[in-house]
Image (cartoon, rainbow, N blue to C red; front, side):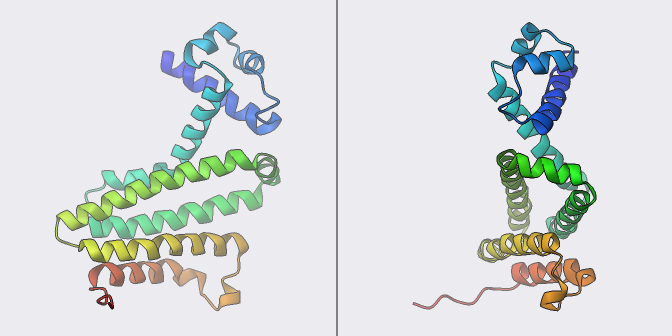
Length: 203
């Protein structure tokens, strides 16, 4: 019961923050909208900042929730890494599509840029943690070498950012890229990067 009350408070606060803005939302607003007394709110949260942080945590977890599901699948690290790429691109494409189809969502994102940036940054932190776990497991099983994944990791992060930007701008055609082939080409790039020996460094 206690966890349900906390989740309800978080969800009510999320909606109020989205529509009124963080600064314009008070603890009394949250109490009224959730049909809970202020005393109940203070049982779970010391102040509005704590509620705000809980909202950010929940929304960032929703972004990466599908990536976490990969760990429940019985696959070796290399297969998980390829699945990670697929799901990561799926999330970007679905998020951008929802934003384009919902003028309300676009408006909320523009008026609350700081909140959206915090959600995104926290989601990226969690994403990187999962990516490191997959790659570390691969090293432990002898599928990858530490040097190859360290070098590939940088390229992967930059690649993900580039794909995200291209999806947002819808500019694949400008670069002569077939969007239907992007994910297979991305996986091919990553596979060759982590299974080949990097060139020796020059002195």
